[in-house]
Image (cartoon, rainbow, N blue to C red):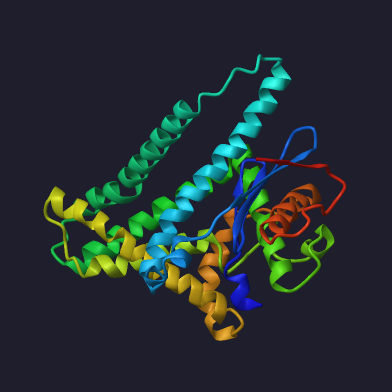
Length: 310
């Protein structure tokens, strides 16, 4: 069951949850009227379709890219549902969608978000570290990594104060509880998920923290960057960092049963106290609907009407 559960993962979106199963992706979003809109797409990771890509480190780098792609699709779908509800509330006319323009806007949004993330979490810490005047590559990279980690923690804390983001974090908690119920072979209903914790060792938040630590270790081998080009060349090592981090998070899921190894997972679990919030039963129902659909089961789990869309 543990090996099978490694193929199951989730992600919180606006008023909903995305679940990735062995052969597909399910996105469940709750409308303001209480209905749950469900979208089910077949999906098989490229590492399963092309066997030689499923090797340690390389598979993690590929999964990182795939996760970004799938996550953007889920966010776009949940945003569309939210926009439709807002239009109905305001009585606005339903204009025909321009799919090509939507794709261009989504692509530009992704590019802008990546550029902003690189500038704030990557390049700015390098500039600030340069002000200390370190000659040692060891100390330069250590301080650079610590500054980057402080930025990351401050960012998470600040957005957690935002009401809309808190709702997303509640769905994040619902996602974790649902996956715990599945991994413990419980019946996939709200009552089964409710007792579990919102802190999961195989969480994206823990993964990002591992990425921060791994990046410090990898950049140690590159020494102190002296030029803009040497700073930017570090971006080429992001896939390697992502691949190594994936192998560590995968290993942590197996080692979680051993008390000694849990000590190394504690920082990631503590960080999830920011990014996960105790959900209500309606949010748990949405997470369960997405999970059951991703597993190829009947998605109905509660009183809410489930509407399947293409």
